[in-house]
Image (cartoon, rainbow, N blue to C red):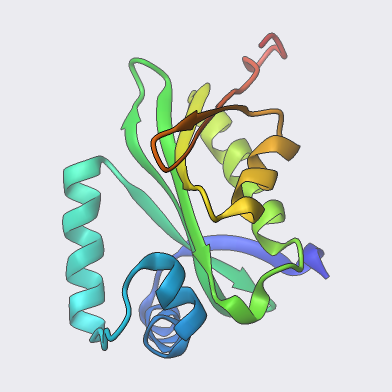
Length: 161
């Protein structure tokens, strides 16, 4: 059931739960291109902090019924130009249940509340599920190199797009 899905700031408990997924989910590791990794909590936190600084990033835990199942982020935020990039991953056990689509809708609302109108992502050509999520929200999708470039223009607060 997708009604119990939210995103929250990453705390210590969520970090440990996310590491369990990252270190043990071979399907997810293959998708992320991170095979044979055993990441410590410190490495995870340091990586996220460095990534946040270098890309003007906000990263959140995707939470289902109180348990971390993945992350979603807004990176490359430029509030002057009202734009940002969206990235996400969830553990393979949770794939094909609508969770990512539901939390994607919530991050769109969050971005809109920050004044962001232009959202984009690069999607690997094999990741058809991710492409479908963007299509569900009327993204403009172009084929580039070995994947897709998706962008969405969110309506203004007054509903104009």
